[in-house]
Length: 120
Image 1 (spheres, rainbow, N blue to C red):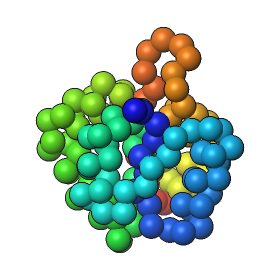
Image 2 (spheres, rainbow, N blue to C red; image 1 turned 90 degrees about the vertical axis):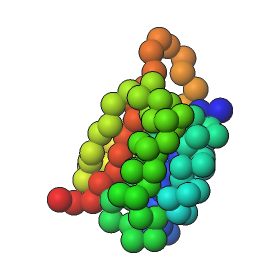
Image 3 (cartoon, rainbow, N blue to C red; image 1 turned 90 degrees about the horizontal axis):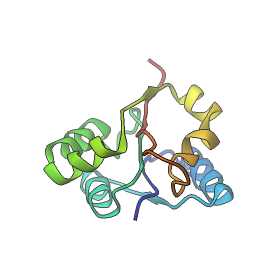
Image 4 (cartoon, rainbow, N blue to C red; image 1 turned 135 degrees about the vertical axis):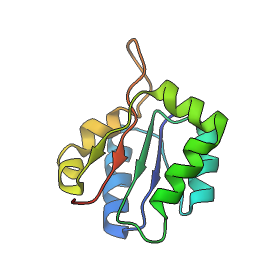
């Protein structure tokens, strides 16, 4: 199925993600818990998973552990490419570019996965 899976609980940031994804015609699904995000990642095999490391409700570190511990999800994540850690400000500045990674592939290769982080 591909697309993008995001685990964020900030309403403004989530709305920005959703609007940019809609404008770019990128399929975006939100997981509101580690269980949801892991299940979505396993079912959809996204090209991109976005986690807000500042999210208290989404438990991003637990979500990362669950995704990495599940052999099927871990394989899908490895096939998707590398992990990238960005401060929210850099992520926001490059949002359209990053979300386009979740668009259906038109060329060779597989786009990398990205992990969203808060300001260190």
